[in-house]
Amino acid sequence: MFNHQTHTNKMKKKIIFFFVIVSLIISNSCNSPTENQQQFKHPKDMVWTADTITYPGSTQILMRSILVISPNDVWVVGHNDRSKGQVWHFDGIKWSEINPLENFYRSPHSYSKISAITKNDIWFVGDRIYSDPNELYGNRFEDLIIQYKNGFWIEHNLNTSFAILSIHCLSSNEIWVCGYNGFVAKYNGWNWEKDTIKLNFPNSGAYLLKSIAKHNDRINILANYYSSTATKHYYIQGNMDNWTVVDTNGIDYNNRKLNWGELGLHVGGANKLYSYGSGGVWQWNNEWKIVLDNYMQIRGLMALNENYKLACGVNSNVYFYDGIQWSVIEALKKVDENAVYVDAWTNGNEIFIVGNLIDSYPQKTIVWHGK
Image (tube, rainbow, N blue to C red; front, side, top):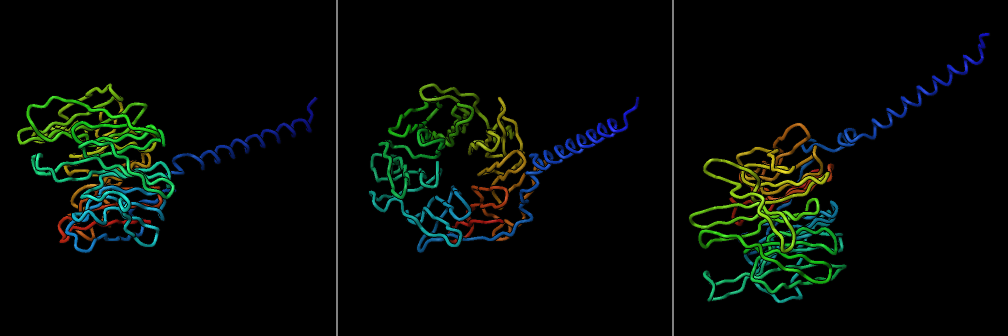
């Protein structure tokens, strides 16, 4: 016998189940990565302001590297011909000069990179310069590594004659640096372990480890060699006392054969490894694959994720990738058509871009802020 009440109850259960499924689908859709990505702000929709950093009596003040703890806690470091005004801090309102060497022995010096573990554990690397008549040009370099730890400044003196060019902070117990003449060092929280990557060159020239980054438990290094007769580039992987040259002659300037970027490494969102330099940006996936093919030089990169990237270049060009295509941020070409943009940071809603105004006198640094 047909039971009308039972049939009605079954229909109600089916209807309720249907709406539960629909509700779950809508909820998951709202929380999908695509939806979250759409919440990020496109640079063309941002309001851009610019601050210019100068120093009295200086002919060059060229910041090279930026660290953003938050939009109200921003650091930039670089070079000043007077060895002053090389570290600046932004509190959300104004830029102030910071002098890490105030309580240390003072000498001509310069900073190449800044990195951090936390807002209370920040690292600055670069070089000191001393007069030395025994050297070819009358000067010798020494390493410069400064740590800002819980309000105190600490100098880590490695007693080497090598300028430090790059740093990669992973934790308080794992910090990597590299620099001139194949020098690489690792800090474990208590002491430094030092190593030298030795390569064979046809004659005397400048040999430097330009950039270092850890990716998938392996240290990656870009090495460059320059002489009056040759230019060579090397991509190196490995670990202390165990280094392998994965590829060499990465850039043939005459034939435009570009295998990777020689100027820098960057580990971006989703644990993707990138290189950048003359000709664009490359991504590593067991081999280098170009993702921004550009005839201009790229000096800095920030990849928030695979659909939100910033590439800093010459001729006032900063390229933005939205997941589909790269485009130039036109707002950043307003001040100087020949600015060299060198570093960037973004959280998807705000952007900081550091650039050098090299055609001006004196040469200055410009910091763009988009929000």
